[in-house]
Amino acid sequence: MRVVVTGGAGFIGSHVTDALVVRGDEVVVVDSLVTGKRENLPTGAALEVRDVREPLDDVFDTLRPEAVFHLAAQADVRVSVERPVEDAAVNVLGTVRVLDAASRHGAQVVFSSTGGAIYGDGDGPTTEDAPLRPVSPYGAAKLAAEEYVRAFNRLHGSTHVALRFGNVYGPRQDPHGEAGVVAIFLGALARDEAPRIFGDGRQTRDYVYVGDVARATLSALGQEGGVFNVGTGKETSVLELFDLCRRVSGSSLEPVHVDARLGELERSVLEPTRGTEELGIRAMVELEDGLRATNDWLTGRKE
Image (cartoon, helix red, strand yellow):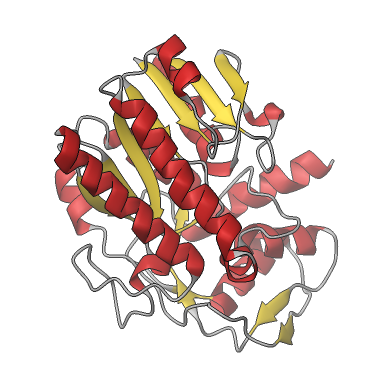
């Protein structure tokens, strides 16, 4: 197939790009390289250094894509709280730009959304039909983008799909700056620095390995629209996660507790049954195994 991957030089997007290239697809990556990296791209994928907030018609007119994986995003809750206008510009306007360009070629869009940030705090595994109660600008922007996906489906008769990811982790996640907690913990431990835990550490998340997420993303192609959770159905506290990170890294460091952050959830875990039954997707990598693979990548790159 002819495929566009926005954010394809980033953490999740590069794994999706890898899978597409291995499959033999013709892939064009659209990435601003603000957080993405050229070295993440496999041989065989073309790169257009572009910002999804700008028109993309020329890129789409040249490739005439049959499918679009839209993974470009501002993905940090804290940044969204501090700079909500920037967050909305990337996550809402950027999505509309992609949908508009794709509609001119009849290309199906698979949109990467979020689970916890859209659902808000839960009291157990959350299904796709649960109330949507975002508590951060990031969650609100992703929900708005999902509504645009549904509106384009109704307007154009398209079959775009939204995937609500859990907390994705794995190789290529940046351990510096505003990154995911797994990369931050393992990166700090590799540098022999005590990681920070915000709040009491009892807040829980659904940690899903990036390889499982990439497989799920490709499985959404050809579906007749819809929204699907991509997670494990298992919740792990930050304290439990830290203990596992210490185990795979061989560290004995203790964490430093600091004040909880505005806009963060206490409990978030996704119910993955719909995706299993309708997409045939299933999280296959156990958390400790995924953490070990991530730590091996981090320490190998450091060396």
